[in-house]
Amino acid sequence: MTATGAGEHSGCHALASQLPQFTFRIAEGVVDAMSKLRESSSQAVVADCPLGDWSAEELIEEIQRIDGFVPVIVRAAQASLEDAVRVMKLGAYYFLQRDEEFDAGQLARLIANAVDYYRERVGAWKDHSLAREPWRKVLVGESKAMEDVVRMIRLVGPRRSTVLISGETGTGKELVARAVHLASGRAHLPMVAVNCTALPENLLEAELFGHVKGAFTGAIQSRIGRFEQANRSTLFLDEIGDLPLEVQAKLLRVLQEKEFQRLGSSETVRVDARVISATNVDILEHVRDGRFREDLYYRLNVIPITIPPLRDRRGDIPALVHHFSEKICRQEEIPHKKVTRETTDRLMHYSWPGNIRQLENAVERAVTLSGDRECLHAGDFSLPAPSHWKTAISTVPEIQVPAEGLDFESTVGRVERTLIEQALRLTKGNKKQAADMLRLKRTTLTAKLKSLEAIAVNA
Image (tube, rainbow, N blue to C red; front, side, top):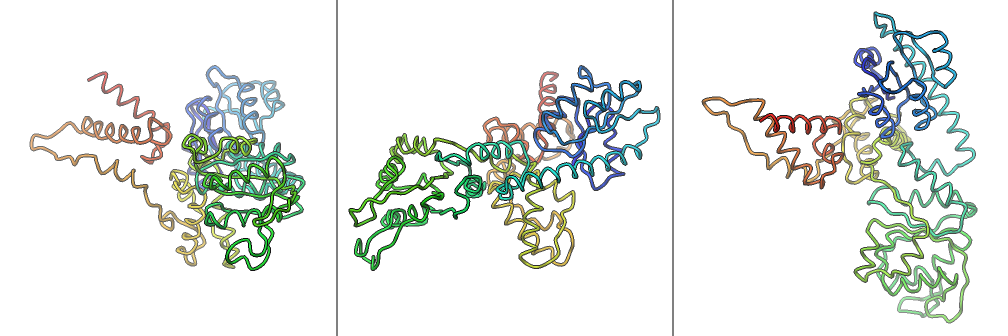
């Protein structure tokens, strides 16, 4: 669970000791709190009034726009009964009068109850959503990035349009394709999948379109291809960017004319198969290089869906870890293992260059290494740092303390500046990725940058 505190005196530090099972994020004002809510979901929000230029009403309205389920506890030093009633009617979970002596215990109990309320609401909504949209079971995560994908699937699923799914390796493109298929009227038939890089070029055409007996050496009997297998269903073409040019021309004809000929046959076969393709490369770059047909690209890219990398949807990591741990423990027929808060925090600060596939493998390794323990600890996850991180850190010069001494603050500042500048160069100025590389929160990196700039100006 994560609670977000907005305001100058949210009391999150005091609450953390009373609610160790929860993770608190302290926001420096309302704008920062809204940014944190958009980055990853919270199960409760504590808002201390006054809130600068924001009223409690405006705060609640904005939070509900971001997440309509999260309960909001409003605390105010001075407020009338009418104020409390008005705020509660707007959707606040509770309006708490703040006494001169801060009662952390009372607020801790309120937060715990608010979290239970959140879980009940979300659980009921999920049950209803899964009954109405069973394909949601395929996808794990509730981040804004993932909700954008869900909205696209909801719109695209019932249509016949071709879909091109793009994203880095390991982001779950095939799962999204399966969700699109299950959201369609073709879900009663199985989706047929082909990996375009798994077969040599001379066999790929026969795999897609089928062949007759004697069409080539080794064709001892006729065989229908994947397109015919996917008739009235969905054909998923993975790694479409690596499809040979000769096969691209025949695929274009199938998409346009809904017909093809088996290899070695002059008989025309008509087919009704919806095509969903996926790629981890920039196909437009392949088009410019002459490796991919431009007309085929636009025919495949009628509906584009981009899957964000895991580092851009860190809020989904706890749910994914729970999902994989539960799945692996069920397969191994062992009790489900929990994950400590410290472990979750560490996993959320790792960049996951291998995306969801790497995370699943890491969870499987952690479950194995944990033995009979009930909980997974950070030490169970062997997380290697990407090679370019090591390069960046290894280039920091060794510092020797001279006999006459040195200015500690100034020296440490120079080292920090060197590390930050290298990280920003490696990430081409992307502060979020640079913060991940240095194992810092983005707000911490921003604060350090401002501090270093101030030091430079004063110097």
